[in-house]
Length: 102
Image (cartoon, rainbow, N blue to C red; front, side):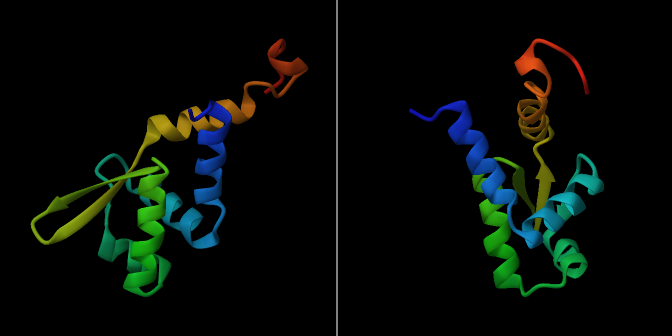
């Protein structure tokens, strides 16, 4: 059984690489429609095979979704998952959840 802590640790591990964090930022900034893999590659400037590995890791962690449109592959941020993760990081920021400091 996966706990909330395990799930969030996996998400943070997926974000723990500079290329993946740059990919996520680019895709988040692209908006709800996401970004094409080719646009991501041009922005991040890494080989396609390396990009594919990083995108798979982010999709597997639930940070991104992917969809095909013709011959193009698009990636979109999972905003709910990102909000859940950041909320988890802040939920006990003061007085172990009994206060509000943020």
